[in-house]
Amino acid sequence: MRVVVDARPALGPRPTGVGRYAREMLRHLPPADPEASYVAWYLHAKGLLKPRVFFPDAAPNLTERAARFPARLYQPLAWRTGLPRVEWLTGSFDLFLATNFLAPATGHPGRVVPVVHDLAFVRHPETAPHIDERWRRRLLTAVQAAPGVIVPSRAVRDDLVRFAPRADPARIHVVQHGVEQTDFTAAPQPVIDDVLRRFRVGGRYVLFVGGIEPRKNIPALIGAFGRVHDPDVWLVLAGGTVNWFPGASAHVDAAVAALSPQVRARVVRTGYVSDPDRLALLSGAEVLAYPSLAEGFGFPVLEAFAANVPVLTSNTSCLPEVAGDAAVLVDPADPGAIAAGLDELLADADLRAMLRAKGLARVTGFTWERCANATAHALHQAAERAR
Image (tube, rainbow, N blue to C red; front, side):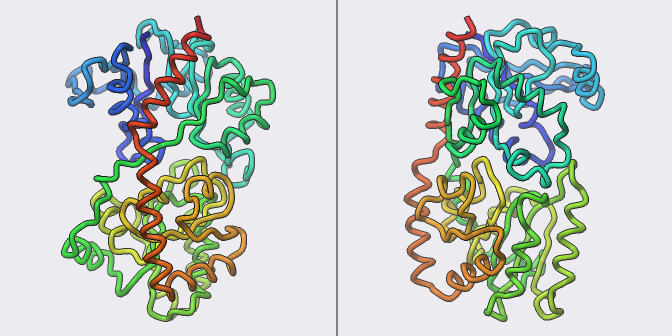
């Protein structure tokens, strides 16, 4: 079986959750399925003059295939004309693993396995203005034609069944993502102190990690922070804007501006942070607050568990499924509920200790090896159907 994996999300300069997923699949999927042949496909126009290997420590059954095509031209051209077909650039394949929802243009839609990370654009269309009707139709067609679809949670599976009622539910595979626990071992205190000095964080703090986009519900979190009783706690918002909704930053600015001057002085926006800075901020946090409106999986929750940080998150979408009883769950639409949850966590050291222990225990069940094994199983079932 020859499987081409869309590696483009893994190579972005500022990888999001989808990028991390693609990167980890390329690390763990080939070793989990040694009898299959995997190809990491990506666009790299500069490679014509300066060839480069992006996955030097890959398993023996993973090879790289670079298309010498400018990324800014390829996607619009392929969407509008259906050309060039991806198989012209990758060679023939039994399956194409579309790591970011949709595959490029192809003459073999029955060999594409889409990874549908979430359907927030259905539940909360106001948070996804970049998703137009044409894209929705393409996804619907792809899901209905696919020999298999991979989703990261039961919540997404249920949403997908409602979105695509003609799709065969037996072909939808729930494969939960993982977390590399060793990547989130707490940073040393001097490193934490250095990062906090650099970002001018002046006390114990509540941390949000994620992209600045509408469904992350950041204005509600800021409003809730304004109601927190502890006059010394800080709020750190770690994340950069997303290309498809740069205006989200203005909403965050407005929410911060609405706070009293005393509270506003204790809000820090870091912008996009590197992985080491992200780990240092997590390691030093009193609480991770992640009251998202809708998630397909919610990486920051597991990462906080691995970093031994108590979590407050939403009681909607997949988040209760991922967090279990290891977090404080609140209604993300209610800033008062978010504030009450933060007050409870900040005031109760015993509760924080209990959640840390539960989080560390829970995160052990979410590994990339387990994810890769389940993905390989789903791909072999899809290959049988495709044949």
